[in-house]
Length: 240
Image (tube, rainbow, N blue to C red; front, side, top):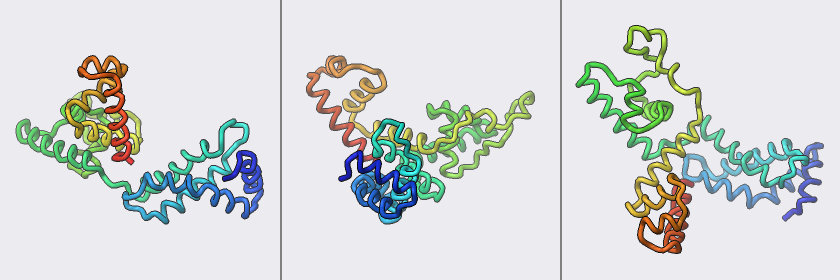
């Protein structure tokens, strides 16, 4: 492994066009690249392609690294490497729709059909979002994932609001990665046994201490700590 000083020297040389320095940085950071690549396996892109993308991300980090940042190169490089992979997977369409999103989309479609048959017109995005306890932007993303027949360009049913399309009423946010992760996290929590789900909700969504949760659940703080650690580890593994 290169020392911090050696890494800086190679970075300086690489920026001057030294090919050997670039190769050395790639070779010495192979373990880091592999550890990041593993998170994206099984999503439609081969390991070799992911590794090549990771290498491109590393080189971008080399050229963008500023010694005045006061951080280790690896700390700066990790988000650059992951970003290169995620950008490719998003633009190439290789990110597969998760089971949670597919199920949500199926349930939304059934709701839309039922609502339309009862009311004579489809529900608004707001009504769909409220029905499934989501933000409107999240509901649009889920519907779009299955190409359901609900247009965000449809205008309001109200006469005094004809000039505004549904799209205009949605928050100006386009962060698919965040929405996917949110849906996956929700799905992972819902799959937990009741007691474990309650522990996670109290700890991370009610901001309670392990001792407070232990008192509510009726076990020791040590048991809560063990259960929480196991759950978090399993969820990280599932979410990649």
